[in-house]
Amino acid sequence: MQELPKISTLRQGATAAIMAADLDVKTELAQRTATLWRQRRLSLRSPLDPSIPDRPGRPAKPDLVPPTQMKKRSLHSNHGRIALLHAIAHIELNAVDLALDIVARFATEKVPHSFFDGWMQVAFEEAKHFRMVRERLRAIGGDYGDLPAHDGLWQAAHATKTDLTARLAVVPLILEARGLDVTPSLQEKMRETGDVESAAVLDVIYNDEKGHVAIGAKWFRFLCARQSRDPARTFHELVRANFRGPLKAPFNDIARAEAGLTPSFYRSLSSTSHA
Image 1: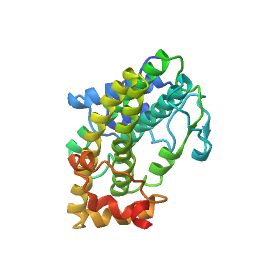
Image 2: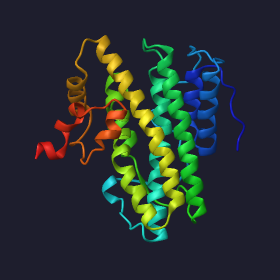
Image 3: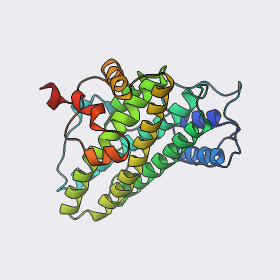
Image 4: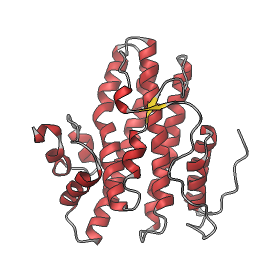
């Protein structure tokens, strides 16, 4: 692994991690920046910080294709398990960059330092998730980059790059919350096929993601209160303006509620409600 740059500010460290194309460097930088920030050994920002890229650094592989070209495979074959874990690794990698981006891009917002505490904790854990999934992929004969992946997650978030409230609505309260809906059934299918090791990795991710959605909900409500806006109504407006299509049922209402995301936020936006 190449030598890591010296980190002097939170925004500089987060931006350097976003720009890193070597994924070992990216995850190490994300976790090191989070640790230094937690120890209060970094200032928030500096005029000398590098500009924030529109796209994160990535290796040459995987090839990025439209979501419609992604194939579904059965978990009853090893190839199918590799395909699923590859897709999860891609989600977790995007989650690393999205957490870093919300810190670097919105470092000039008038929010408490605890806002950045929360999102750097998210970045640290997403880096952990990516490494865990990649290690599991390698254990069953694959690796990240072996299969195509789609770019929908980054595109959805990039549309909210100028509006922090909209970013919180789209990333933690839609994209991350979706993980709470689908992960338990994936774990069950993995256990049914005897892949208890992969199910255990998903268990770590699932429990951490509850906290990530909770951080998103906390700060979304904070910004709405500061703007004297109703959180659920504001969420509806921002989702309709910044997210394509309806939200997908079924919803894990219990896990969402534990994270502070009640049905008044999302039920009326689902495809079932529209139908």
